[in-house]
Length: 258
Ligand SMILES: [Zn+2]
Image 1 (cartoon, rainbow, N blue to C red):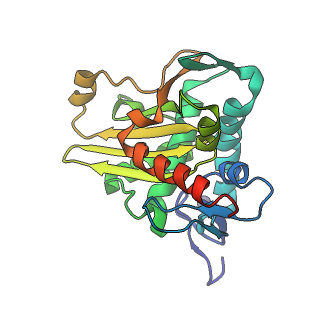
Image 2 (image 1 turned 45 degrees about the vertical axis):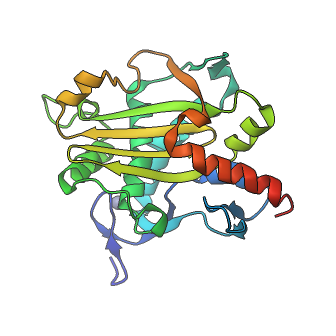
């Protein structure tokens, strides 16, 4: 331990911290392709798109915890969704085989947790109540869904994933695949909702402090079986995304050379 050491957000030990990506680096690399920079589009009518080095990095985890995240969650999650032999594409759904509920749930949860831990501006609205944040941390550290002997974390926190596309244009669908939309948050008294878009997939986490609501609205979250069925939605149907995607698509037309 040296005096420059800081507390790791996952194991809470004081160690030298790595510069970690908040959104998995592989999402960013895919959007960036061969360019060293990302194109940043602000969702408004006037701001011109700009190139930026951002890749949302900050000191958060020690080397051991960074490795744990990568081997337990990220390698699995990314390869599951990218390996074409796992995936069967239909008109209304995408089916992902070789899916394991607990591993995939923890992979998604690890991204949401990083966003909530982050002090970067892009994620300043992403927060969990402190007790919940501790529960998530413990599940990730122990690589388990169990909060205690009686309850699993997916009973209070549901994660959903849907595919976003434009049914009227393949070109627009292609552009949507390349939009990385960091975060939407929506908090009411008893429900927290956090979502982000990456590679055409819209991830949503709902935390219900009053668990009964889940039973009422039949939100089942990620399936427990061996295949993950991802429903396809026209981006215009998703309120949180409609305006941002329209802005991004308009600006792609207006500024083709940026
Ligand atoms: Zn650590």
